[in-house]
Image (cartoon, rainbow, N blue to C red; front, side, top):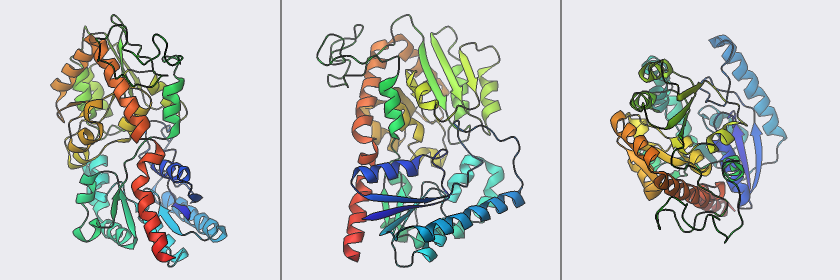
Length: 406
């Protein structure tokens, strides 16, 4: 089977397609790429802010050039058995349909137009909803539609749901590598004292999973700072102001926080924390290659805390990545996140800054619980969040499609 990953997606901004490609290859499937990244103005913390935002005419010229180059690449590529159109591919799928007549198309549909409007704020909603018909046409053109949670599948129109496949986002290999290579987790020989096969020295028996990875060593000790990190866009989905309000209530506790990103609610979040918060470090962006190592050097990774419809049905990139990097995951108590993490995560009600502050204070006082959560998260990630695991439902459906077409 030959699968083509097609479109103007950008894996440096949205890693989803790269994870799909890696997962399919690990299942022995040939994957060819036909990709000309368009880039997105809603880039995350690993992309530096542009010097100036281009105007609409300039964006259209850039888009036209990308499409022309994409078409030229596609015409030189071997004919695929299946084409996967990457994230934000509402227009790309129509190009693929014309370039590869008769070839089954798969649309990676992580966000609806309404989801993007919710993420970018009220000012963008009216404009984005104008392209709803384009989105519905893209979904209709696809043999399969990839979504990230069952909740996301349910919001598709009834006629499209039977073609939807739930494929969790997962984490790219670089995040697992960062978790193993972190200087804060010294690899130890299996079976010896402190090897990671027995509880940490400050833990009660049974507090740390007996089967935690042998290269994982909990390092948060009594008297040290609990290191907490949050990264991503400051959008309504993220609920960053909830984090800001919680941080303002942590004075006197040994908690050091790193906040990375930019976006609509960045200033509001800073204002809630207040100007005199020496234990909070702010960074607007981090180079892509540096971010996994930076996250792996922390004890707790914060997820999303928004209360909107999108926030309640997603499992964000950062919780997969934080778990893969060896952090404890603290996020909102939503159905998809609790279903995915279970006892490997720590949950607070969406939008509840008091509960978030309480959870952080408890963790700062209970290193054994931090160790348990970190061990549980990394073990779960290495079993279920690796690329080959998350693509299993997709591989099964692709083989059915190709076999039927043979």
